[in-house]
Each structure stands twice: as structure tokens, then as C-alpha cells.
Length: 428
Image (tube, rainbow, N blue to C red; front, side, top):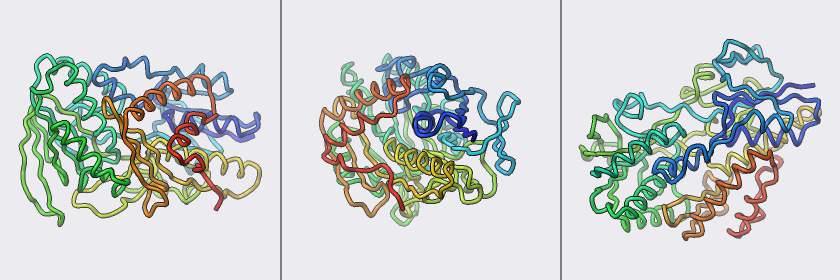
């Protein structure tokens, strides 16, 4: 009997737990360790931040749901991974030993890398965690009572740009519904070299689509933007040219600001030689397995992926939901192979299918694979994307509650997009 521990209970961790349980014989023990007793659906955080969702509506208590499937659960969190000993040091002083470990923690939010950034000790809001989104919603309510300038964006070394765009458009839609949009000058600040780069060197016509959407909504933008520091009500930004030289300095006043920070790996793994890179992201091979500690796999935002291309201001590479499911698919198959005495031979396709909500419409991005050069790349617009994202939220929350592994919604969306034959993983 093997004991497999999944570290993290977000989209990657929960999907991993259910799919692994369905694939493996019952004698193998599966444990999920999280720093929270609940799953929360991160893609809904922008809606929470403008009071379009209540936080409890996107949360699912995990212990009972996982328990029904025979999966053990701890909300103690992991203080430190000890890979040489196959051991986890838990946040409550306990420990767990494993035969295989799957790291699916997501990132650590590095607000401290920019003076004055962040919701706790800084002056900007965040939608990276549901608790941050709740705080942002409280600030939002005060802001709409006394509107003023607004700054939204993504800082240098951010590696998930889609939510920043979504939040800007959702905020715009909410302000228009309240008939106060004319009282809110809005600026979008991003480390991307151009609008729609997304950390992916663009996806189809993402540059044109998102520039048009910003123009239509009278949202100004600054690209190649390095945020130097944030003071209360004022953001100091240096805009660089294509060679990385200073082009212009901006002092942006704001009454409300939401900025996505840089990501790093979580404290539990940072600094472990052979396991992580200097930023704390887990090193993996083509099978999602760590080269130094081959009984450790990793999926999701915590994995190390080098930048696609050099940019004047450093940007990270996003790991979208469908890409994460691709990693999960390969990892489940490879663990199953190892437990049956075979070598891992599945590799994820790393395809990206992203539904971006624009408030009252939306954009679908498809990149197959996500990292260029690609076989398929395009964008589609329409209100159906907005509705499809709402549908995906409801579907995935139900999936977590019921422990389902059937990707019925993913298949229907792919069929709608005309790419139903796309595979999540394949053999090498």
C-alpha cells in the first residue's frame, strides 16, 4: 500500500485527489493537506470583489466531501517539506510521511517586493484569495459612495494577467450599472510589453481584442510598467521602452486600486535545493515529476515554467485552469504507472482554454499548446462567454461537492468551440 499526499486544495489539488482516487485501487491511501478547511473557486474572486457574489457562495467545506470518497484531509497546512525523509512538517506541530507527494499549493503572493503594495500592509487591493476579495468588496462599497480615480493592473513578475483584465472590465460594468462611471477615471497598469500579451506572447488576436475593449470603456493603459512604490492614494510607475530604458515616470492618483502582485513558491518549499528554482517554484520534467526527488510531482501555479520571451519588464507565465487539468491528467496516469511497476510515460498537452469575463460580455482564448509555437490559436467574443463562465463556476463547485471526475462541462465547451478532440495528456 502506498500513501500519496496532495499538498494544496485548490483547483489542481482537489481535481488531483478525486481523479487519483478514481484511478487507484482502494488499498492506496490518499491524503489532502491544505491551510484552509474550505475549497474556494478562485476564478469567481473578481465577482466577490464588487459584491456580485457572496464569499460563501464560492466555498465548499472539504473534509466531508473528500471523506465520502475515502480521501483523508487535514487543514493544518504544511510548515516544511523534508523531501530527503519523505516527510511533511505540519503547521500544527504534527507530521505526515508519504510514499509519493503531489505539490499543488498555488503561489505565495509577494506583495512585499513593492513598497506599499497589497491589502494588509499596503494601499492596494487584491483578488488572488477570497479573503482579499472580501476586503476589496468592503472597500468597493465605500468607493462607489465616494467615487474617484481608479488604478487596476498587474505588477512586475506577475504571472496571471487575465484576472486583472477581468476585474477592470467587471468594475467598469458595475460602475455603469450604478450610473457613476463618468466619475471614475480608470487606468490599467501592466508589466506586459503590450496589451493582451498575457505572459504568453499573445493568444490569437488578444492584443486587438483587449485594446478595443479598453478603448470602448474609456480605460487608459500603461504597458512595460514597473511599479516603483505605492503611497496612500498615489502610485509611482516607471514606463520603460522596448530596450528596457526609462521612457516616462507616472504618478497616478487613485481612490481605489487593485493590483495583482508577483508570485513566488510557498514558504514550505522555498530554498530546498533540487526541488525548487530561486523563486521557489517546483522544478519538474516532462512527466510533472521533480528530477531530484522523483517521488514528488507538482501541478498548477506552483510549477516552474521559464518566461516565453525576454521582456523589458519581467513577466511570468500563467497556468490556466485547463492547463492545470492537463497536468493533473498526466500526473494521475504516471502515478498509476509507478504503482503498477511501470515507468511514467504520460505528458500533459499544456493546452489553454480560457473564458475571460468582461462584465456583461466575454472573450474566449484558445492556445494549443499554451506555449508557442502553437497548432491552434484564436480568440472569440460574445455574451455567451460571460454566461459560459457563470455556468463553469456552478459546474465546478458542484463537481467539488459531489466528487465527480467526469469532465462533462469541459467537453461541452470544447465542442462549442469546435475543438472537442483536444487531449489533456498523451504518451511520450
